[in-house]
Image 1 (tube, rainbow, N blue to C red):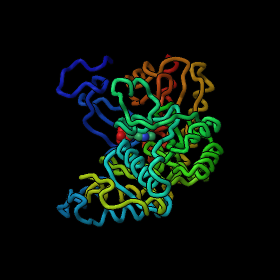
Image 2: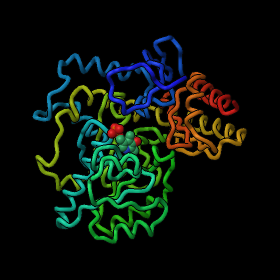
Image 3: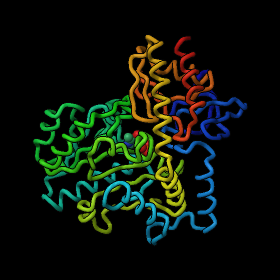
Image 4: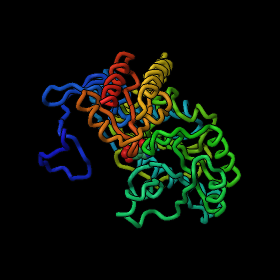
Length: 393
Ligand SMILES: *Cc1c(COP(=O)(O)O)cnc(C)c1O
């Protein structure tokens, strides 16, 4: 299928295929012509409970019954307070700032890190260390910490004071920290946009030590991999390292826009009224939905079942890799898996779509699989079978 030719009034920042989505249920979507697709993009890891989730729908309906969609942060409302409580209960002792996207969550993290650094060691500390292969968003601060020259170059100057180090290379971290001016180190425990690259646990552990020695905060960006995607509520649980700041967004409010920046008690102690704000952040409707989503993920055996499905997907992908020389490597954690190809990902993503499977790439040669967390084993088999056929063709 060709890329879109039909004119519309949307600004041309996206490359979209011709099809127009009209309906969804579970792991499946339908286009306007009634064609059905297995959706292994989940809105880029957003629709964790699938499309048409009764958990999400019921939470929206119940929230609407109060009549309060939005109040602004001039006033307290209960859903956001309850959500913050539940997040810190499961993450680490601290406080939560709510915003509306992943980039905003990281921008907030940078501001809170600078405020903390200014309070604790004077104004010189303001730098951010990020990693090659990272993606942290597209606003001026988060874009400065995103290792993509072609996203950055047309929009310079970006936020100054960002240094890049290499994952797995502690020497490069030491070099970046040697300025003595670093407020925070930000890393994705699994680099998602950068090609589905899990960061080794021992490197994250070493990073924790280096940050403590240097007096810098450690920030984990779990915008894409947090909240159950890896089979744990937070990806950091697996590496035995607790960050000072954790950023979340994509799946948080079941498809409604919401981000969160969780800061440790030590950081929270340096934040004052007026340091940061957002009009929409943590409103009663989105917070009610996020609370229902989070309760679903931490409740019962939900995460155990995610891990069982993950093993099924990993098994199916291992067999796929063994039978195609065009597959270089399969890697990931839980229900975020990448298939690195010898060639370009684009034609495979297109071929899969034409065969009824929606995928998204992660870089030029990696196919990313992001099924909903409640995908069935039959749907996993169906999706991998389609991918197998497309790779053969
Ligand atoms: C998507 C993503 C972001 C940016 O989130 P937006 O909601 O698009 O601003 C930041 N960090 C990571 C790891 C992401 O995957």
